[in-house]
Length: 336
Ligand SMILES: [Zn+2]
Ligand SMILES: [Zn+2]
Image 1 (cartoon, helix red, strand yellow):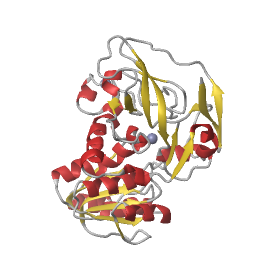
Image 2 (cartoon, rainbow, N blue to C red):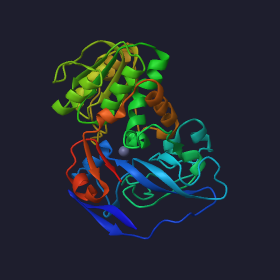
Image 3 (tube, rainbow, N blue to C red):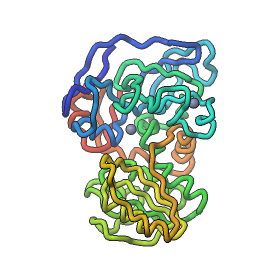
């Protein structure tokens, strides 16, 4: 089958590779129909993330089920599903606690299409193999465009976890998002608006991202990060910028909660610990646990007017994927 493969910075090519086959009764094979780029993909393509080459590419997709093992009961051939980017069994202690990004039954950080752990193959392929199909696959209901929710595998749940549980705990609270170039911040805007946040303010961010944030319902604050704004009960650092991180932390009100989706490759990134201590804020950083959030997010699309398609900035056809991925700027969705 054909598989889009990352070769080196700014270069991807289609390669012929063996088609995956079912390796157990609980597995499924899927044919990706709509694939989105993740915020991390842009960094990989530009050569900013250490990657073993060649790397099967793509880890966000909506797909059609093409074959299931004998013990699979939740999906059948022909179903349209979202495939979480993290491999998880759904049954171990961590999965039962919702910590599917750290499933005990697979290799650490086992994912599709990423150079961070065991790679189960990329979604820009004709076929992908899904272990633990009943636990992993999330049916996409009729009436939802696969292209609109192509990022349900990863970036949309990553946005949800920064504001969803927080607004459930503190309904109607105001939200501050320190933005950069990460589309996860845009999903957070749309989800916070859909969940009824009093207001969603965005500080910082690239100009194109600020424009999209406003379309999703955000109020735009300064383009540069001040030392602090607010305070806010819920803050989000989606900036991957030392000043944005500090602004989010300093803008969190006493006993408020700040979530950072940014990846800081510098181990010595400073944080204002004394202010965090005296105010008593909760700070969470870490990889998303995508799978448990996916049905929640689909509910917001169906019932609360959340429109993730507003985050999509570029589209391409399957045959143009190599060039489109190599040159993509933000949220690219590829369909066939
Ligand atoms: Zn990702
Ligand atoms: Zn597990």
